[in-house]
Image (cartoon, rainbow, N blue to C red; front, side, top):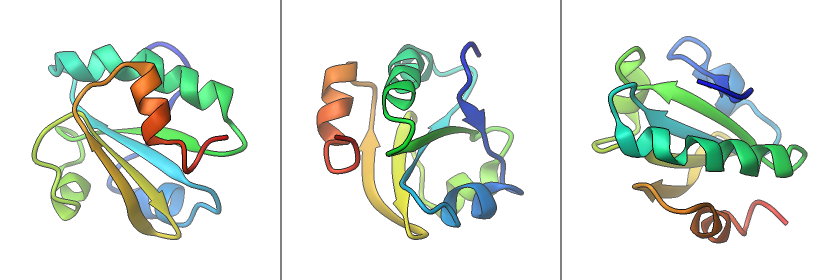
Length: 109
């Protein structure tokens, strides 16, 4: 995976995501998922463009099944935005960057 998107695990999820003081978008993905790889550059670009507003992290569902199951992730890519320890937005499926930015308009200026 190119770029500098941070990876979280079942073990680090609570600290890195739920305890964050700003919104965190979690990209639930897997190595074998083509659409997941397709949206990765868009997510990196959004994260790079809005570093003070939103944190973007990735969670590999094959390596970290507990968190994916806890949040009912059934298909990937699933993008959950967490704020104050709660899911405040869910986006399922691959979308172009412009559509993702529209979906995230409440969190990025």
